[in-house]
Length: 471
Image 1 (tube, one colour):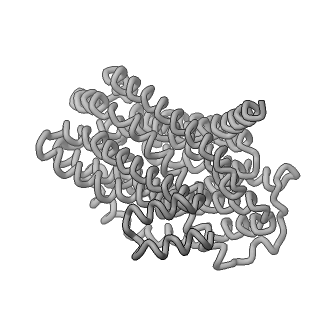
Image 2: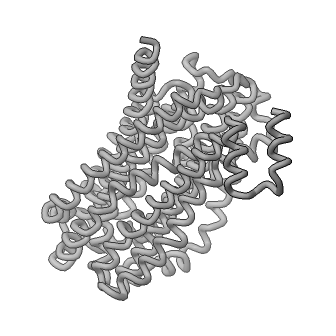
């Protein structure tokens, strides 16, 4: 009966955190989908291609916000799990302080926009629209980063539903503003950028109201905002995988844009924009699972509740794979319908239909990787989480994108993601087995000695007997 009660409680906690988080992340994915929809109808294939070329630089803003926000959230949850409430408050304050240098970094990048966009695959006809999109989004980058940080802190403050409500409110505002700026005022790509920034400003103000209310468990005091290098180090170290997750998305789009421009021209770039909108929506759902289980796993890790931690992780993995299967069915089954929603031209339509069909295979494996990244980050293993992120986007995927198009043309571009994620799923399995053995080794001295003996890592059996006697 006790075991059933614990299982029921774990299930309730899982749904309490994961469902709002998944909806929140889905709304973030729909943000880009809505932008693409309105730009496709308001600016055509050229506008779609331009916004896709510019998108990696916009993701840099989100990456900085995710690194600070999720890194701070993990550190806060671990501290609270250990009962260090004062440290948790100070971590929150230092997390907000870190927004200042992040904004300064974005400002320093503004003079370098043209060479960066050209390197990202911006053809001459795409450069002006791509430039204005990035200038606007970077100009309002503070609101994007601050919203990411505050919403992450809200989820770890026991308010996942309110965090979800803020994201949904932002999405509704984005849809209305996109319609107004892109279609009514005919602002094109620039109108889409302004809609995004103003929607994020609304989210920021709503989140700020939460932390100024009595609902929050943080004790807001001036002492929270004293810069402490040790706490900054904790936040940044814990947040490096989250930075990598966003940079990996930017790297994926960057590499795909260059290869699609090389093998299929602007029409293929526009087709990849449509495919990436579908990918980002499914990715956000799966990432929402990982984001949702993070506060629970971090807290349980800090409290030493290993069994409950593992139960939450297994539920998250199953849910992400299930979403991946649904995403594969959607992408393959809608390969002829989805491009029409973006008002795609004839040549773009052909590329997008083929790409949606081939890339459908990626989604189940993508779910495995994304939840595993969040799991290792949540238990205080940022190095392992970073290995999964950076190995994929800077080694495995680039090799796939270089070799496969050379052999299969544009079909090879669409197949690169499924191939790289299948390889990464094998890496995830290996890392999980290694971590499980390490945990057994730490907990069970007899198993530790047996494994050292079998691996011949100890110089003599006399040392083993001596250690066993001492134990």
